[in-house]
Length: 82
Length: 400
Image (cartoon, rainbow over all chains, first blue to last red):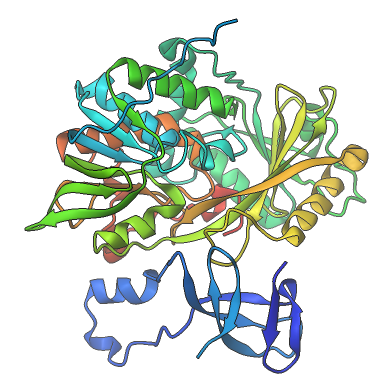
C-alpha cells in the first residue's frame, strides 16, 4: 500500500485514490488536421518507463482533487513533481 | 550420489545467430522450439536476463481455455488449445495438462447476456462452450454458493469443458529440453541492453555479455517489452502493471474445476499438489516492481470467500506478482515492427500462459517467413492506427 500525498488532504492510503496514468497528455490543438497515426499516438500510446514517471492521481474517496506526482515505477518511491 | 542429468546445456553466447529470441519465458521457449520443429531454423539463441522461465512463466495461475468472443481471438487461442491437447506426448514430458473444465460465473443480467452471447459465438467458431443455469453450476461445482442470499448471486455461467490447467514449470522445462536438443542455445544471465540498427535493419543486440550479431531479433519479453522496444526507437501501446496471485496451504481435494468470476475479479483452481491457486485483477498503476498492494489481495479474498464459504479457514501461504503488459484492447500484438528484422510478440497482458504453444507457433512462422502467420495477421501493430481493434476485455476475465 502506497502513501500518496494529496495536496489538499495530506498523506492518505493508496486505496482512497484512482490512478490516472501519464501526466501532461494534452488534447490535440487541431484535431481536424490529425492523421490516423497521430490519432493513434494520442489515444493509445503512452510512456511506459522503467524509472521515474509523471502521473495523475485522483483523490476519489476524499477531496476529489486531481494532482500530479512523480513516482519511480520499480521502487514505488514518490517525489513531488517539479 | 550423482547429480541427475541436466535437461539443457548452459552455453556461453556465440558471436552470431540467425535468430535471437529476447526472453526465455514460455513464449520465447515455444518460439525457439517451433522455429526448429516447423521451420528447420536451429542457429538460434534465447537470451534470458535472469534464469529460464523465472518471470511470468513462474508466476501465472496456469489456466488454459479458448472461449474468447471474437473470431480472431477464438482462432488463435483455439489453435493453442489444440496444441496443448497433444503437447505432453509431443514433448515427451508429463505437463500435467488437465482438462477439468473452466467455469465463468455470471452475477448480473449483463453478465448473463454477455455469457450467453459468448457461448453462441464460441460454438460458431468451433470452440466447445455451454451455458449453465444456477442449478447446473451447483451440480458442476458444489462448493460455489448459489443461494439467493449470496453477496454475489450466481445467475449462471459459461463452461468450457476442454479448458483446464497445466503445470507451468513442466511446460517450460519440456520446451527448453526439446529446443536444446535441436541445438538451440538457451543463454541465461544475459540481458539485452540495446540494438545495433543500420539503414532501418537490426544487425545485432548489445547485451551484458557482449555484442551478439543476429539475422533476426524476436522480442518475447512480456512486461518489459516497452523498455526494449524503446531502445530500438519503437513506441508500443503497452502499459506494464503488477498482477498478483497467491496460493493457500495444501488442502485435501476440494475443487476439481477452474472457477472464474469476471465481476468480482477472482479466479481459482486447485493445483495437483493441493494448494488453492488464486489470481486477482491488476494493480492500477504502472510498475515494474514485481509486487503489488495488499488491499488488492484482501479484496480478492473477500470476494472469494463470498463465492466459496468453505474456504473461510484456509490460510494464505504466499503471494507474489508478475509484470504484465496490457494493450488497449486486451489482445496481443504480434508481428513485424518498423525496424526490419525486428519482431514483436507482446501485449498478452493477464492471459499469456494459455496461449504459450499457439503464440510460439505463429510467432515462429512470422519470424521464419518474415510474413505474419495467417492467425497473427489481425494482431499486427497497425490495428491501433486502422482502428480494427479486437476488444477482448469481456473474455479476458481480469479487470484492466
